[in-house]
Amino acid sequence: MNETTNDPIRCDRALNALEEIIDPEIGLNIVDLGLIYELDFDDANSILKVVMTLTTPHCPMGESITGSVKTVLKNHFPEMEIFLELTFFPPWNLEKISDEGREFINQ
Picture (cartoon, rainbow, N blue to C red):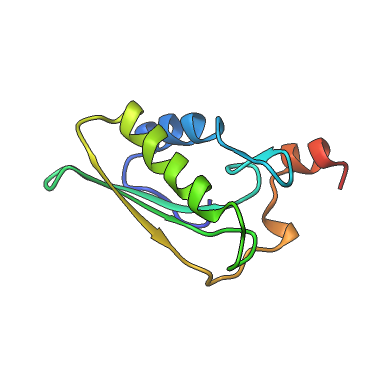
């Protein structure tokens, strides 16, 4: 993740949940791919803000992946409204893949 969260414990829970979501074209989960840029818990407004990217702006699985992010997080944090911001800055690149992800895809 590029940004820190205001709640590291719930951030870890969210990231663990998001590891369930696999990019079908690459076969690696979206956390290890480095697609999640920020998680922010706004308790005053009951909002969980997610800033994320896709491997390309025209990713054919983009809608499916972002929909899965919202669904998984809503299941794990039912008290929160999920607000997802999709960004392409900074653009995703292979350097964003975690060490575990690199081992998985043999980079």
